Length: 132
Image (tube, rainbow, N blue to C red):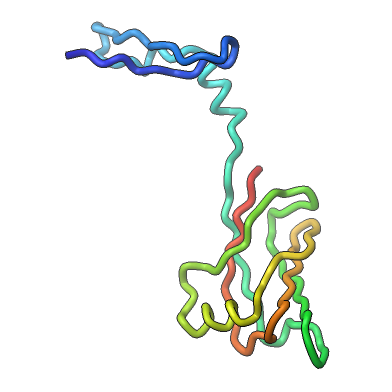
C-alpha cells in the first residue's frame, strides 16, 4: 500500500501531498523548492557552554550576586535559555537550585547571571541554548 508524504506549502498555507515516484521509489526527489527554502529560513538552535565559578560572583553580604561569563557566539539580541549542563553533579544542581539562578543581561559573547538566593560555593556548568 502506498502512503502519501505531505509538505506544508507556505504560499497557500496548506498541506499538500507529494506524489510517490515509481521510478525512484521515493517521494523525496519530488519535494518542491519551496520546502528547501522553508528549511533555510527555519531557526537553528545552538548550545553554548560556560562555567559559573566560585570566585566569579560579585562581592556583597547578601543577594543578589552577579557573574558575567563568556559565551562565545551570543549577541545582544540572541534569544536563549540557560540551564545546567548535563554534566552537573548533584552537589552542583543543589547549589544552583539554592542560588535561584537566572540570566539577567547579555552582550556580545557574554551573559550575566544573577543569583537571587545563596551565593554558590561550587563551580556550576551551564548551557545556553540560543536560536539564530
